[in-house]
Picture 1 (cartoon, rainbow, N blue to C red):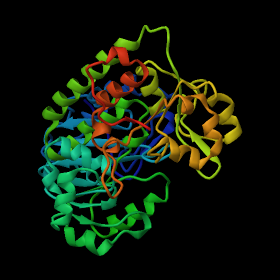
Picture 2 (cartoon, rainbow, N blue to C red):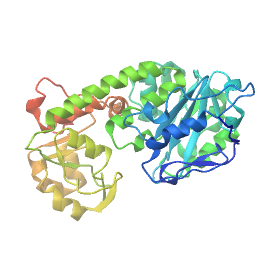
Picture 3 (cartoon, rainbow, N blue to C red):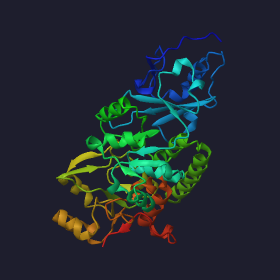
Length: 411
């Protein structure tokens, strides 16, 4: 093979013209959706990476074969290290890819990749910026490695709350109120970061300048419940627990698909309303969203399934009421703990038949006194259990032996 001169500092173009920074000195472009077809070619190029001793670095597996549902990250395994890519990690981001090298020995990395961040694995000291990240680490049996968290009041996990009370885990603040002195003092091997807007880059850049290894996570942007759950395989890379994560996810995948098959051929599916307005605007889940997929797989018909967005759609209350009058079931009504809470927030809700019949369910059955909600922790890692709850709501006859885990009926 004729060696290709690959230098750090330039770009490789992925689908949708997304840009991989600091990787190659040339550009490849192709239409959206062609990444999987081009992976063998990328791996062929990767095989041209050469160390000083002339040994090749062909990947042990092709990157897109690592995930089945998740689209927010990809992995290439080389002899001695993994090359991990995270795609568009905040809302409305485009053409952004962050790449990281995970390994035990930086000397194993070829010169052509030395410009990328290197993270020594397995990591021993971790800071998580989201309660969901905490749940992934907990599911891997590595919660003792967490030294810092963001927003202690939003954590449900009783064991983590105990560690926080004991001082073993420190709250480092959140968003623009991060306590950088605490972060430095914790000496993390990795800081798992996420953001909903591009200003999160300001925090990332500041942490990087301080010598803190930052890794972006876009798990919350996955549209498929199994896509979010599959991020456990992403976090497993940092603890060298890929096999354990794969086995766990395969069980989740099988359980979820078996439950979805129960409702696939049903003819009678309830019309489902979701959410609650905020300051006279109802941010309705889009028809291609995470919530919409759960409703569909549970045998419901989402009232806004004709919309194509995967993100929340701002609607005025009149537009929502025009469809809500047909709802058979209402789920996820914000922070409401009772039907009285709903009516108190807007008296017009009392006129909805779904409220009069009491067919309103919220995912707040497992909460802490300070506001933590396990739906956003273990519920994300275990979407099959969330799906079982929803099937019991929509079609109770199919799940007579199932007891609610995350949901409860409002009284």
